[in-house]
Image (tube, rainbow, N blue to C red; front, top):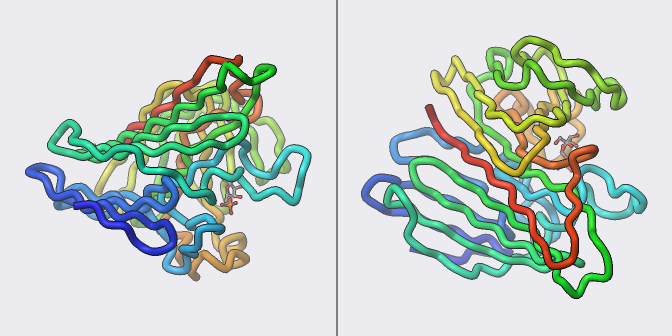
Length: 276
Ligand code: TA6
């Protein structure tokens, strides 16, 4: 079944033999993924906006064509325009594991962007960016699938897979830190951009008794973020105490890993989110 909701919110209710659940797309923004019999994998704030010109606080917003603040125009929206513009649904088709795949496209100058969300017993996201051959020169962009995962308790959560990767610590003013050599644990706001890493991450959630694995291709950066109480209290679209039940693990190409493509070429980034 495929129904269209308000404000560009598209709700895909997947009723198939193996993978019963729902995904919602707000402008190509998956906000819900719950394989049959499982608690939701993605987190969305109870206080989120659902307005076409505002990003949803949760799910998997697409950050594109820049990450964070605009490099030269501070008045531009945080994390680019992809997550606050309307995308055209170009296909809804059967996929593996009796799942469904939804394809969308958007033109974000000077790029043509296509996005495919494949919902089965796992969630597969494919973002392809093309630069038309009519473009006068190569073009550079940043991208991130800003994935908000639902977890039982951030205090007990640990993330493995990034121990041997240097990172930029945005809480420490953007200092570059060497690889930590240990799993990520949380005891305060954590906002890190891991660079030059193509490996998978595993998110261990003891309270919910589950492990989520995120593998990727075409991505060199991984962003990990929890705002903790101080930062989340300052965000009107973030409910009180919600910070304990979420963590962002983002498949990305940002900063030194930004992508540059020539006219007539394309680049694809994929992420696969699996419950172990
Ligand atoms: O991905 C982490 C981050 O860049 C944080 O620094 C924080 O700003 C977060 O994204 C949320 O950004 P937003 O613009 O959605 O409020």
